[in-house]
Image (cartoon, rainbow, N blue to C red; front, side, top):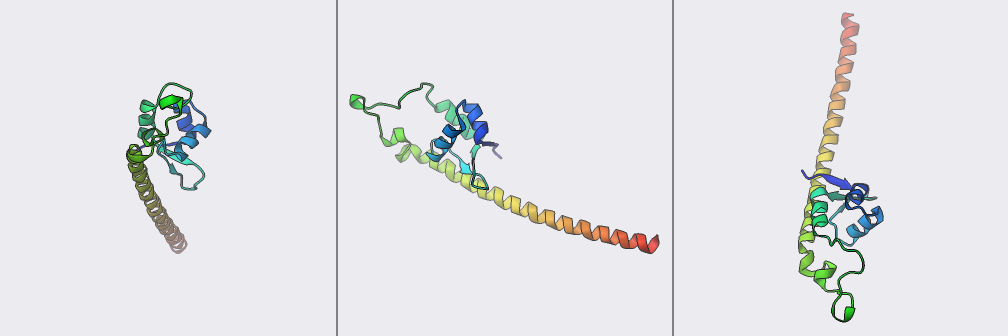
Length: 133
């Protein structure tokens, strides 16, 4: 299973602010899914690493087209076919998230069952102590 990172973790790794990380997630530039409470983002460590390897090290305005006008083509914006791998990765993250939620629900039910068994064992122990004791 892939390691998941919080917004703060990613901000530290990328050396940017948490606000920038959230913006990258909202814009689909950095693949992420909402956490279970919906209040934050979760990022796959390998997705962050891939982003880090492919991001431009320079600062300043984005790519420019002819006559110095910012280039808004789909490939630069992350739209069109260029976004397809990201969309696929996001879909995979969403599937993995749902699988994890199902696993959590299964484990919670198992925990409740074990708790009930423990309570019955304690009750039987008390009866035995009273009867034999």
